[in-house]
Length: 406
Ligand SMILES: Cc1ncc(COP(=O)(O)O)c(C=O)c1O
Image (cartoon, rainbow, N blue to C red; front, top):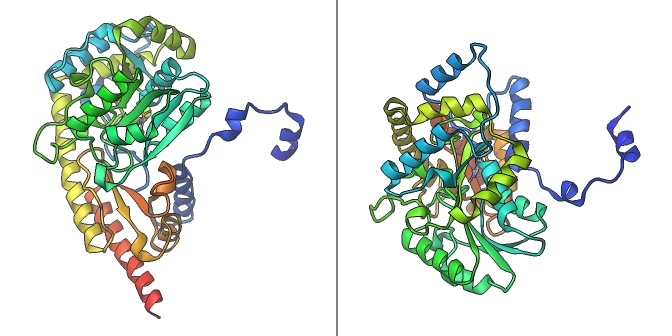
C-alpha cells in the first residue's frame, strides 16, 4: 500500500503535527548524503555535529557498563551523582552555586527546552525570541499553543535581544523571553550587561527567562576580554537549558540538563516523569566521567582547537568578500552575509551544494530577519575540510562574479 493511500484512510493529524517545520539543515544533509552515496565528495559544514566524540574516560566507562548488570530507571530528575557533578562544575567553572536539587537530567538540551516550555507556556502566552535563532524554540512554543514573537535583531546588537527591543515587542500577554548564548546560528554571546538588563526587564514585567547555554563552555572571552558568565550568576531564577552534546562531544548519547528555580522543582519532576520517566541510565552513569580532570582537559583542548578553526574560517570568508558581521566568540558557527553575490541565501546554499559540493545552512532555518541574506557555516569540521571547503567556495563565488560580469 503506498503512503498517499494510507494518509487518506487515517484520521486527521493534530494541527501541530502539520504545522511543525523541518530543519533545512537536515534536508541539505540528506541531499549531501545522497550525493556522497553517488560518489561525490561533499564537504559538510551544515550541521552542529562536532568532529569529535565523548572524551575517552567517558567511552571507557560506557564500555564497562555493558557487562550484563541491571540498568534500571534513575529517578526522573536524574542520577544524583551526575547532578552533584554538574553542580560542582557550576561552582568551579562558573563560580556560581547551584543546588543539585534544582538540576534535572534530560535527553539532550532538546528535552531541556521541551521541559522549559512545558513549564512556562500556556495557550496564548507570548514568548519573545531573537530572530535569527535556533528553530526548535519557536516550534516548541507553538506546539504548546503559545505565540512566538520574533524580534528582528542585527549585527548592531550582536544578534541578541536588548531591553529596548523587549520594550518594543512586549505586551501584557508576554510570558517569557528565550535567549540562546552563545547563539546558534551566529556564535555570538549576549554581552553580560545586556543579559542582566534583559533579565531585569523580564523579571520586573513578571516573565520567565529561559536561557539556552548549550554552547556556553565552548565560548571564548567576551569582546572586552572578560569571561562569559552563566546567566545563573546574573539571574539565579532564570531557567537554564544545557547539554552534553557540544562541549563534551556527545551528540548521539542524548544527554542534557535543565536548571530551574527551587519553587518549580516538583512541577518539573512531574513533567519529566510523565514525558520520559528518566534519561538513559548507562549514559548518565558514564557522563559522570565528563567531570574527571582527564576528560575536562580533553574538552578544553577541543575548545581551543575550535577557536583556531574559527580564525581559519573568519579570515577565509572575509577573503572571499563574504563578511561575517560579528565575529563569533562561542559555539562553532560563522554567520555570513551573501548579499554581495546577488543570490538569496537559499539559492546560495543550493548552488554551493550542487556546484561546489559544500553543504551549508541558509538563514531561513533561523527566522525571517536574515533569511535571504545570511548563511551558517559550522566549523566543527577538520582543518583540512575547512580549507578545502573555503577553496571550493572561492571558486564558486568567483564563478558567480564571472557570470555577472558577462
Ligand atoms: C542552541 C541549541 N540548543 C539546543 C540544541 C539541542 O541539542 P541536543 O539535544 O543535542 O543537546 C542545539 C543543537 O544543535 C542547539 O544548537
